Structures are given as structure tokens and as C-alpha cells.
Image (tube, rainbow, N blue to C red; front, side):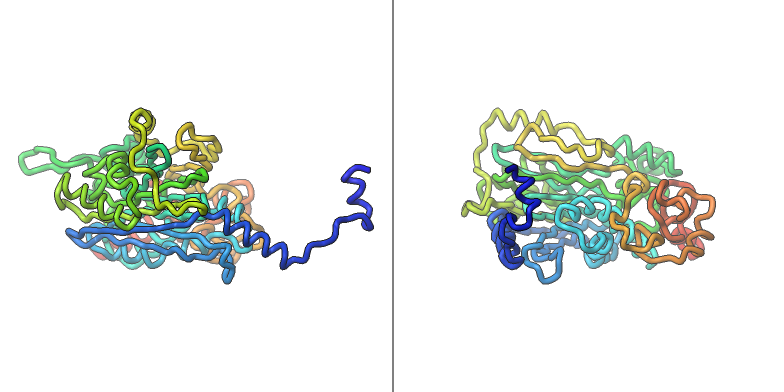
Length: 437
Ligand SMILES: [Zn+2]
């Protein structure tokens, strides 16, 4: 008798395993599977505009400790601290509320990149509504088991150091000076890109966008800068091998002084807490205290290992190989769901997307589950009545009548924001701001 036939006969089914036993097995399985995280933090303030977040105890399912994940973030503020403080307080909640409830772990991780986009944009809209002008970079890292998801706007980098001295960059620098694709996007959306002009006509400093004079092309906040400075994050999701790895998340005070390889090498073999101090110290030693300098080090340690970190002296030829592979800056848009094995460090790249076009980021099937209202805004998660939506979006691509084929549903205000980011019209916040002036 084949297995299939045997199972069709009820009398021959294997005995049922009680649910509690199954859950117990799963819990034990999860525990032995999951790596241990250790985190260190160190900072030196010059202007006091860097903020950070360490939340090691988040739960996907309330009350279920096996559904835990950890969040680490850096917010490098400019033109005041209010955007950095606001993002620190609200961004994570906004991201989590954009994930449909009741998803299993795998579905949850797959929904995370879109939820990060929705959460970043919502946080920006909410902050701009306050009418304050400050802005902030954000690099937000979600670690769930061996899976690392990084979302970032601005230039606070996150690097990953793995066995064998392989260092990879998980973020893209949104700096106008260094990112030609972003310069093109800003110009096409109505901004001007150029250097600061001194009175004698001499151009100085990095490329900036005008109006505003910001040298970043993406941020949260910056109400007084054009809407082409967008809060849509570059998102990358990777799966580490069972040998684990080390994340170094830091503001540009570190990266202006140290390359990714030098930062990683400066602290190899050292526990996370001390490693963060060493990276900051090395940056200060190299360049002095020119800017706020904040560093988080997160070690993702195999469960069987007491060892805190990666070995201190990787082979030399591997370092050369790495710098060849990662010497080139990433582009904004790369293949979605790359799903390929990286040739180095056995890090599996699961997802990467950096487009600034909202339709490309939220996709047709957002939110994933049909149990929410068809007229729930994909960004702010507010339910609209069909009439509101229809009158607001008539004749547009985001009309709710065509949402199934042409993208997610957006409410009036989020739609206005989307158009403003693409240079199609001024957002409400920009309009009200100009009236105040
Ligand atoms: Zn909305």
C-alpha cells in the first residue's frame, strides 16, 4: 500500500499529535534555530542631532515570545532635532500597522518591505503636517532570526561583516553628489541641483538641491525643501548563513572618516559594546569630531556559539576580493526578489528595491490580505468610504474602481503626497507652508 492510500483510510492514519505538543516542538525548534543578538552603542555629539533606537523585544504575535524580532535604527537629524525625534517615536509603529494582521512568519517577512515604504511615507506626511522644517536620515534594521531587513533614506549606512572578512553594504547613499540617478530624478521632478554659490560666483561644497540647499536626495521631514526630496526608502532583505555576522549601523560622521572595510576591521574579534566604541574612536582619530558620530554594532551569533563575534584576522586575499565586489556604489533600482546566492559570505539576497516611484514599491497586492477594507489607504491605513475615494481620485490611476488592476488604494491626502513627490503638484503641506511665508 502506498503512503497516499494508507492516509486515505481513516483507520490507518497516524495518531493525532496534541496541539500543545506541536506548539512545544515548534517553540523548541525556533529556540535552537534562532541566533542570539548582542548590541553595542557609542556616540559623540557635536550638534546633538543624532538619535538611535534599540528595541530587542518586539513581538510579531502579542504574548508569543517565539515570534520575537529586534529593531535597530539611527536618525541623523539636520536643521533641528524634531524630525529625528518624531521618526524615532512613530516610524516603527507606522511600519508595523501597515502589515496586515494574522500573517505567518514567512508572509510577515515578505510583507515587510512594502510596509516599510508605507511607514516611512506616512511618518513623513504626519511630520510635515506639524509645519516644522527639520529633517532626518533614517536607517531602520529589522532582525528576525537569520533574516535582516534594512530600510534607509539619506546617508546613514548599514554594513554587514561576515565570516572570512566579507563586508557588504546593505544601504545606498542618497547623496546628490554621489548618486547620478537621484540627481536625474530630482531634476525631472522640478528641483535644481547645484553647488552653493559664493558672492564672487565661486561654487563650493557638495551638490545640493534647490530650493532648500539639502545635499541629501531622500529624507523624512524637510518641509521647506521641495517634495522631490522623498521619504521612500531603499530596502534590502538578506538571510545570513548559520555562521552569523555583524551589522554596523552608523551616521555619516563615521562613514565620512572610514570606509566600510576599515570600520569592520577596526572592531573584529571584539564584543559588540566595545566594538561600537572602537569604531567611533577610529573615526575621530582619522578625521576629528566634525559631525555627530553615532554607531550601533549588532552581532548575530549562532546559538551553539559562546563566541561573540567574527574572527579578528581574516585572510588577506579575501579582503581584496571583497573590496573589488563592493567598491562600486549600488544603483537605486535593482532587481526585485533577486533570490540568488551571493557569491561571497554565503549571504542570501532575498529582496532589494530602491525606486522612488510609489506604484513600484507598494505593488498591486498591497495589503496582502483581503480581510481589510478595499478602501483602506495603503499608506496611512485609514478606511475611506467609497464615495470619498471616488470623488477624490476620479480620473486617476488610483481610482478605487480599478485598484485591483492598477495599484493600491490611496486616500486623498496620500495621493496628493504621491503626486507632489513625482513633481505633479504641490502637496498640502508645501502649500500651507508657502502661505505662512
Ligand atoms: Zn492615506
